[in-house]
Image 1 (cartoon, rainbow, N blue to C red):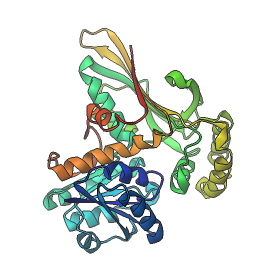
Image 2: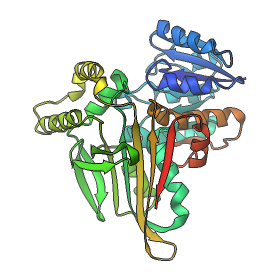
Image 3: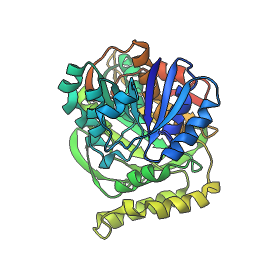
Image 4: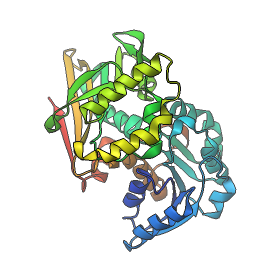
Length: 369
């Protein structure tokens, strides 16, 4: 029996990872985090499902040691304990020392791209260390790779995400979002290096049957990774939004306060803004969406554009960022994932695998044209 340790396993995303893993009776799962009582309650909830063996442990991603992981007999560790902007690689190094695999849900650019610094150590230990097995760059890179054969060259890639307002992101994710307000973001637009600012650059996008929602610039690893992989790319954008227009414009206004230097740590507002959002969750829906628009030249030389989108209903949107990590964890335990070393999650699972792993969820996939 392979054993998967999910650190942050009782949080907004970690709990969903545990839920998906717990359907497999051949797995042992450890729900871990700094608060043992919460880990034990979550473990008890899923143990009652009567499938996987689920237990609990008290672990902190910032201080976990190789000895801790060997004691738990960990095969794979999933790190769902953001925000990753303030983390280092203590946990990933502990996994290497313990000889177990590591996968995280990070979307912080420097954290995800910097994981390659552990490549030699991970290879020497015979383990896989992966950062960013989430919506970005994990799923976004899988989407682009799945359509790459239709293009002779990519010229622009545009990605956007907007969750439903009823989703409760938790304190860590809220702090992560706020930390990017008004911050400069290096990207590439129309063939030149460019600077945009977090949650600025207001624009609208229609998410299929969900209708149009406001979006603004957000910094993600994709802005660095896609130009490296597709050198013909002239424009790369990533934008995100919140469903309720008033909330989105509130973040937009706050981004100017940060950019002006009047507010240096917007993440300090996370408890206050999260509490307000929870009280006003009735204003929106539980439906969210993600899109990836690719443009360039086809294999015949003609201009070509493809837009892929996913609409998540019934509050199933938060399963999007955890599915990649679940796919990789199960493949590692089954012995079907043979890559070793440390790397961003860029093309490490396929869109076909993602669709298969989520076929029981209220996901609608679309492509146009």
